[in-house]
Amino acid sequence: MKKHKRDPEHRSYVKGYQSAIQGRSLSVCPHQENTTMAYHWSRGWREGRQDGWSGYSTSTCQQKAGNLILSH
Image (tube, rainbow, N blue to C red; front, top):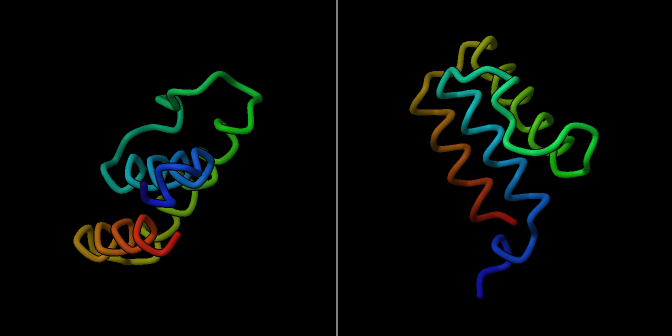
């Protein structure tokens, strides 16, 4: 089994990042408010949104998201 599948917090972070680069709202977080999983998802979402605002292209963000999955 790959490590990223065993780390649900990192996976939640990556899913949040992916949601941000797809233009989804922070309000679509799939986790219950004030939980660790929601925290990691929103942290990923914020980083993804910041990367978009910093001028990264969608394809660059997607590549970064893929690297986040593989690197952990």
